[in-house]
Amino acid sequence: MSTAANLAHTASAASSVRGPATPVATEGAASAPDVDVAALMADMGRRAVVARRELALASAETRTAALVAAADAIRRASPDILAANADDIAEARANGQTEAYIDRLALDGARIDAIADGVAAIAALPDPVGKVLATFERPNGLIIQRVSTPLGVIGIIFESRPNVTADAAALSLKAGNAVILRSGSDSFRSASAIARAMSEGLAVAGVPADAVQLVPTRDRAAVGEMLRGLNGAVDVIVPRGGKSLVERVQNEARVPVFAHLEGLVHVYVDAEADLETARAVVLNSKMRRTSICGAAETLLIDRAGAGRLLAPLVSMLLDAGCEVRGDADIRAVDARVTDVSDADWGAEYLEAIISARLVDGLDGALAHINAWSSQHTDCIITENVGKAERFLNEVDSAIVLHNASTQFADGGEFGFGGEIGIATGRMHARGPVGAEQLTSFKYKVRGAGQTRP
Image (cartoon, rainbow, N blue to C red):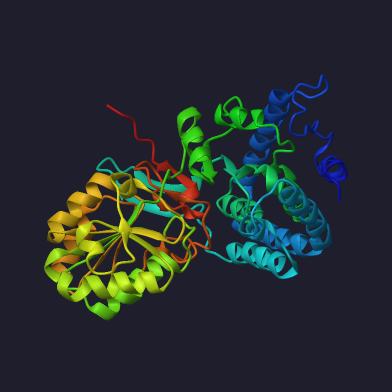
């Protein structure tokens, strides 16, 4: 399906369930006299607010049924999604993207089935809305409950992976939120086709189709409009992508942001570590998938255990195809180790490279981590429970682990049914952001005529 045909199909489908279609602009067309990106985005914001008000009144059963219907609609739309994806891939190849990048972008029947299965799995999660979080009675007889509520309208800005469209929308909807999605340019057609299918599924189930909207333009001005909040319509922004995207969002957003800038992930191997445990955890933390934010980037080894631990761990990584960068202590154990620079300690490689150094025990590890950590994920490997507890208590990262791979830094692995990102801030959500983290709360107060003296 061509770009023009795909956008026309998007507008037509939107018109059938929502009334008149919003004007659509392609990248570079913002200056055209018949396209006003600011007006287009403001209209999306208004529609999202109406949809989230209706969602707030929908029962848990209705929202679950709507997600099941959205999953079914994705399966039915597989031919359209594959056609759109083929156009995205052709454009990516023409633009000189790498085969690894194209693999992240590419869809096939099995991947579309997996996307639909993911939406259905989120539908089956416990409902996070309306949960009584606390109940207490005041001396004057007032009964006060703290009850979970949807956040409202969530703006999600993401890059190449088209499956994020469904994951992010489903998690937002599970928590009773409307969502405005802005995909990367390379996945624009694929993401549009997935979002369109989901909207149509929602409408069939009696949920507002505008609860899922994907920005129908690749014009970058749309991102700026979202970051300004669409006249108060957007309650939170979630960026999912590379450092430049996250930096822009954090610097320019006028609404709260759930995000992490970098995953500078450390693994500290204590002198009291079991060597086989250390081998397994270090190798998996670095090499299972080097391109994810939970991949280890720095290996710290207790100097007191270096004679037993250093050479086996460094050689293991090198033999697995990982470049190891280290100082003289590390280079002395294997000629394949390359020199490390100060810049390496702050590098998120996202490839098969790791920096390594010896530290003076737990205090040395804590000092290094406190100096360089991005507060994403950090791990200790030790058989000493006391040291482990101190590490877990004193490392101020969103996720801290003992004797477990840092690649467990994932919402699906936490049982959240997926995630729309990892938040490293200290306000509201922290760590994997799943459906439960996309809720707020309010207080319900019940009385019997009490007045305040």
